[in-house]
Image (cartoon, rainbow, N blue to C red; front, side, top):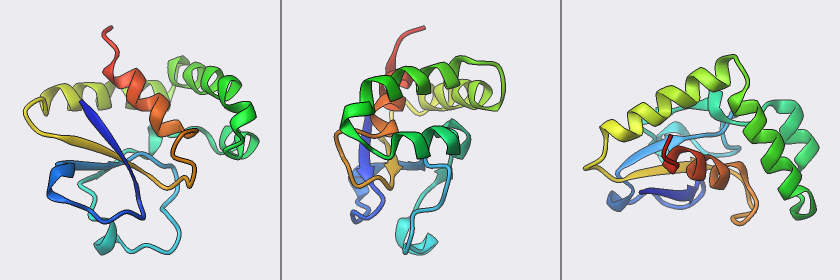
Length: 121
């Protein structure tokens, strides 16, 4: 099971492997303070999609469809998602936390990514 946590929350031992899943580094936080183990930026939504969405709850359903399409289309995102899924499977005995910077904890790409990674193929 994958946990989700905002980048601005304090890291804890319960987080286990901390993976930043944003394309850009969270504003105002140092690498030391973030304490991530990996940065998997290629699985984040494209800049264009992120700017279109702007964390608007009214656009979330359409955003989810568009983001899932991005992840399924050939290219860097699809390959990176495949690598991430494999990595998560290899870490089964260790907790994993996806770290994201979005303020909105209910409507963000990390929720969708978690769902996709946890799905059975």
